[in-house]
Image 1 (cartoon, helix red, strand yellow):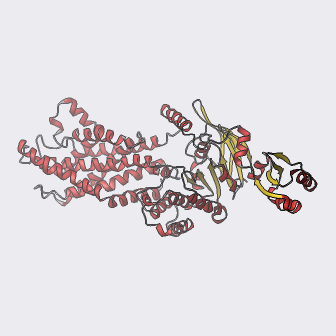
Image 2 (tube, rainbow over the protein chains, first blue to last red):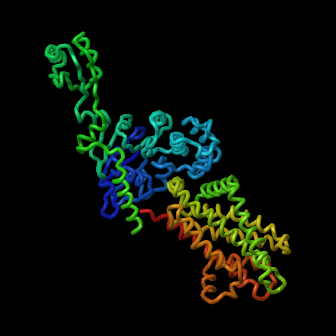
Length: 325
Length: 254
């Protein structure tokens, strides 16, 4: 049985349809990536799944519990790391986690061990008695991940976990995230608009304008935009092309003095190429399709990394809707 | 109701209260300024009947003021929590809205009662004579009034999302509440429109209850305006109403 099941979910604010009839399933113990540009409906979907807002229509289940009818049970089985920090900056890291443990009804006798384990996992144990306001952005995010695990959820939601982090903290955080399904027996549901981050997911769904436009493993999705491209410069392109045809049965294209061949497994064919062509080869380059290429192909546009004005319009509209109702 | 959540909300508030020395200092300085600067000055101008000094007369009012400010301040911190995101951590937890409101209400009650007790200890300095029974009575009233005002503050906090609204609340709600409460002058001496406004103010009944407890046998214009039973009934009914309405309003997110 899938741990998350969404059927025909719709969420609209007046005329604005933030989520437009999406359906998907997430298998237990996997990392599921929910991708799309800002304002595509990712956070709205998370908010429905976390029972923070109610859906206009459609159904959502987590661990078999109905998000609309059994919010309390759903809340107990999930952990959330929001886009913006939700830590109490005037408390220490340790106190923030203890607060969370009490809030989620963790048994008193277990609180200490769980908090210690969580702090150790994200390597913040040494700094546990520092006030959170002294933490860097990366440390805060790690602390929030640790907090999300305290009550042993079945699913951990990460909404843009690496947003605003420097590359080093980002890589560091990814280390913890990819370890989590095995180490903490938890399913990860994450959103991101950094396409390259989605590569670590077991399954990806790409959402645009409230609709899921494609779903599959990163490998499957990349296949839809063609395979890897190996480009090479040689001393004699004509001779090399004939040799390549003989070796792989592929016609290499020649562009600007370089040969391009498209293949399923680019990395595996490079050694063979070099063995076959010998010292005719001057240089070899491997280009692999990215999830960004998938998005580009399906929507005809690149993912907007920071479309601030568009986003604030949507937020404004949602706020206005809430005021009216 | 989740007692674990109520407990931890109170524990958090208490911890922060102890940690923020400046909050404690200013909370104690304010009543001192009123009692010894305003009170002492006004004593030269007005001399209440019954051999009471003006400073003595405003003592229940200043206790009420201490409770008003510290309770509202504690509850309004919800707006800070909203602004800095921490409130989402609370709202996303498997905890009923009723528990959150009661937890925050009790948080305000604890820190506000502590401050009221500190001010109460000044009574010998003002030449007042309070017996043990009266002190216990004042303590009970302080707890009930603190809870009432705290839950009223929570109700206010549900309407605001950013801390810019803090000065609006202070200037247009808290200060008028203080001046229209019978703290500085007896309600029965006020002109009719003001007297009506005063009767709609929950703080009036709290201060009146304190007057009942502190000046039990006083007669004349400076005496309490209502019976202690009326005061306590109003405070309790309003507390329940504030809790129920605030819990409802937290649900409204669409």
